[in-house]
Length: 48
Image 1 (cartoon, rainbow, N blue to C red):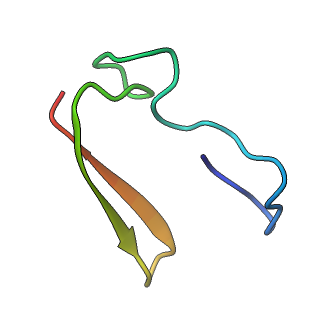
Image 2: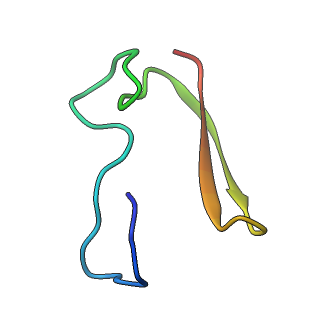
């Protein structure tokens, strides 16, 4: 999910949509999740 302007009530799916797959918007085999506090980013590691 991606939230803009500190709006925590609505968001946009940016990864993992439309089931498993190898598209840029899909996850095949997620293995780890990291949070980068410096950039305020959520990073998903995927083997797919």
